[in-house]
Image 1: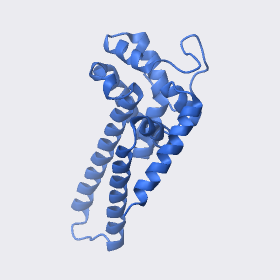
Image 2: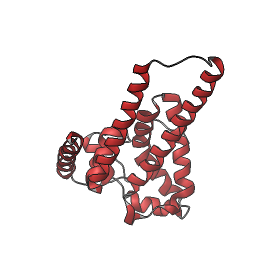
Image 3: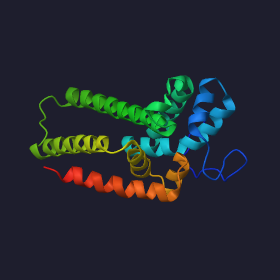
Image 4: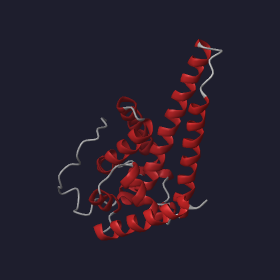
Length: 198
């Protein structure tokens, strides 16, 4: 199983113009259907790699983490509950969690190395302040995303975190392009209003 962020395959008999039913593929994967997993893999691979790369910011590590995520999807597909969100959202949640864990692990290892190498070094105040500000901003965005509808949040995550085009978001969610664009516009407007509140 090799993970790449290349272009999706051209349409074939396996895939309709609107894209496969990912919820159904995930349910069939849970039952051990390897063909369903192959089709699911092809549909989610690019968004997973895009999201993981955005968090990890290292191509080699991102590919490794994406591989782990897709193995986890195969092993834990039975935990998917369609009443709690779409298959794509479930897969991307796994991807985001794994990517954040990798960043935290790398950061912790780096901190241990720095402490052992330079015990008396103090980080400049500005660097600490910037890191705190970045952390607070990340928390604010997370809170504001949680205020959006599930449909708006899915579109924003796929477009801005996973780096999909509007057409690719529409295909991933099996929604009309116009609907996706409307959800992105309304979601961005509400997100902006939330972030603008004191």
